[in-house]
Image (cartoon, rainbow, N blue to C red; front, side, top):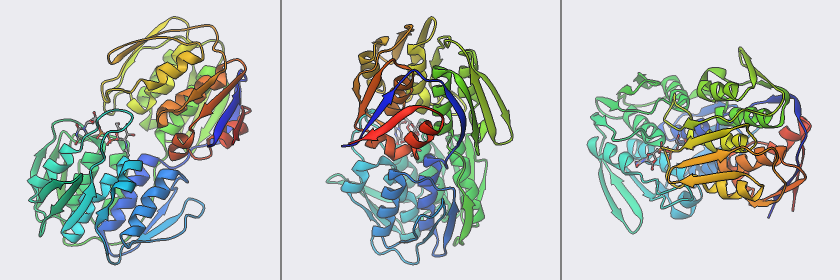
Length: 417
Ligand code: UD1
């Protein structure tokens, strides 16, 4: 199994291009199910999760073109099998995003329940409740959701909590429903907006994406479209956190600074100088960071997907940072691994108190999920000596060319087998 070897202690410098957003690309790939016409995408990141989604769609009969320089074309002329099996859904929970589009287009779908995952229970009850409100008949049998509806009809759906993929699933389903759907307490994440923009180019009638109430007027059919996937704000934030930890000066290009305000604010509080101009962000950091405290929240709050990276920063901060996780239970597994590098972290329930230490020492650590892995990379870059990160397949799910991008900034990092 591949590992990452990092020799820490070197400041980062140079320029790095931000990739397309994984969490925008995944729902947008599923949007191809809503039309028999081609959907031509650009800026699709080369990631394991994208390959998994492409494979899942191909299994259903979608023609998926080769991914070439960020471009990818999909066409769902006919759908043979509106089924997402356990083998796929268990490796990637976002597979559940096929449920809404399949039901809207084919009138039936069979999708495995995702089951537990490393960062908590993560149920899909809101997806199911919303589709039921739109007239779907959904039964759960032997770990599968079996859904059927002649034609979904518009409904007013008030979600019990803010769910990103839940909002996306219901928004996609509503585009082909009869009548108007109102999604209340909708997720305001930029990736929801990017999906809405893609659906609108396909002819969907959607208002309010980016606010907590989304209104979708169903249409009889959708057309093909071209769409460029938005920049990955979490990848961007991860590189910014790395520079804040190691020091140095880095320019990020093809980014979307306006989607990163909560992260940028925290990194400024930690002492980083960050300027944004158009699609470029420059970060400059000297000296040891100041510890920061934060609480994760749905957008525009501080993203749970950046929590682990900021914890890594706090590990070497001056002072004490308190980190509270409100989105996912059990999302502190990285704390134990960071402790192996010499971090001083006390976890009490959903709060971690991090006392900054002057230096971390390299060690062998294990990645437990995608963003936890990213935090180990940030910590490894600043730790003295060699850090060996095991199970980096998690990183390959969500970071395009991570070790090449970091090596390009002067980090001593290599993939070893
Ligand atoms: C998405 C992101 C993930 C990010 C998360 C929160 C994708 C592919 N993944 O995940 O990277 O960490 O948003 O920003 O976009 N919940 C329920 N019932 C439901 C749905 C959710 O109880 O039906 C709960 C979850 O257990 C969790 C919270 O709601 O506690 C938020 O989850 P959600 O926003 O749905 O996360 P994902 O969409 O899976």
